[in-house]
Length: 397
Ligand code: PMP
View 1 (cartoon, rainbow, N blue to C red):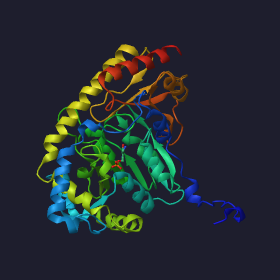
View 2: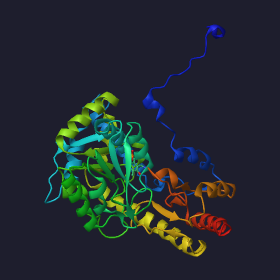
View 3: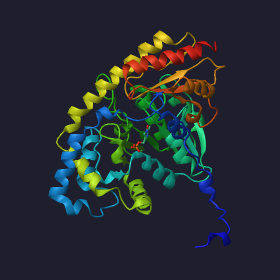
View 4: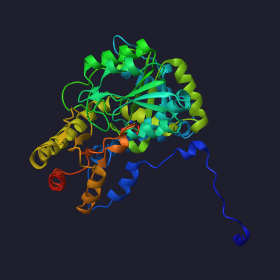
């Protein structure tokens, strides 16, 4: 074809598409993929935790025993035995969850998009934590909400603040366990107060919980879902307890919402890969996670301790950081005059990277904050990287 005669296409993107931006984190990650960089920037789980042999055996078993079914299209709400497994895993004495409340999704990130699609109109009030998970802010932004940031302190969301700002909100998006990005956890008292406030105000409460199982000590705290299954939308994921590459998560919600989400899911991708769901069911059905998750908890707890000790040793006075009880992240607050975006430029020159905190704020970004992930870096490199960062910060005091 002779293209000389054709004018280049002037792409006219939809108004919705114009709201899409590349995640600041993914852009940064591109730079930090360089092997010489000590990167605390990633949000990736440690590949050491991926049960490769166990997954291979599950794939082999499914393909040899149920090959034809697993390679066929499947139902939009998901593979029934896996939905039953999710429902029974989440049920407690006081709150029975039924499979009809479970929608399997292609990673919980897809769940966020589907929730945005069915719950948010242009201008809808959406309540989020200060700061919140960037991927959720991005997913919801496409639907044009008016974000309202709910005040928080070191213990997470302040439920009492909802009375003033919660009226007419379409939803509240919360991360009660080892929050991304801050690593902080909501106490049991605050969980009850939050669920109670949302129920009183009639605001649907989203509980995004990909890290809940990764507590370093004791048992996981009670889920918001079990405190009020009528008013809470729970999101879970296999990314942090099995592997993220399979892209598998679930949304658990009251049935009318699940049916609406199912329609949105059908329009988006018909259904989540049948093979993946059958393999994951095969991989988890006999209790594998109860032996596997403790190994992840131990690894992450040790890595976290190494980073906390290094921060204590190398970071100057005037810098504050969270002390997570689980999960993958530490949140650092620098003296107010230090802009972490500028610090990152200098850090990359020193071959260290982190994620600046500003993109995690829906409103009024606090530029003196940053997120450190400690799970994919070796202890020696954690110490080396933190020492370099400490030196750069000291030079700015
Ligand atoms: N929610 C939070 C809080 C996350 O941190 C992530 C992954 N970084 C997701 C959702 C998306 O997880 P998934 O891999 O299940 O799509």
